[in-house]
Image 1: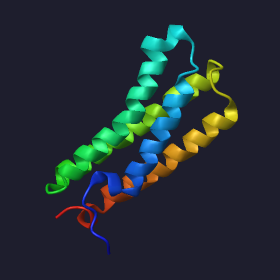
Image 2 (image 1 turned 120 degrees about the vertical axis):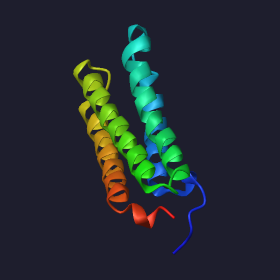
Image 3 (image 1 turned 135 degrees about the horizontal axis):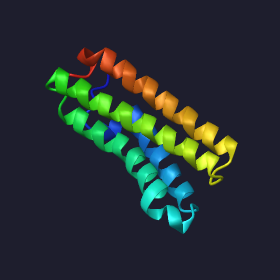
Length: 124
């Protein structure tokens, strides 16, 4: 088994980072009146998944803190899915884009849940 030395080596981090970049690019097309609401919120929550993963990785020495931060990641990923639904209903994204990104976040959520259910594989 390869030892992971950085949060950036985690597959789930890489997935979340790529999804957040897609959301950033997509949100550039949102109307200006959404700048301080939907645009900021979806960017913040998608980026927060990655930031919380980095923090979880650094706290892996303490299993309870590690799992707690993973749960924060789950919350941010789920929040991003809600903002995607708003973007769809407001007509800012098409259904295929929403489905694609929602599926990516479901995969991210699955990996986060698995990590949280087996913290001993990640903690020391």
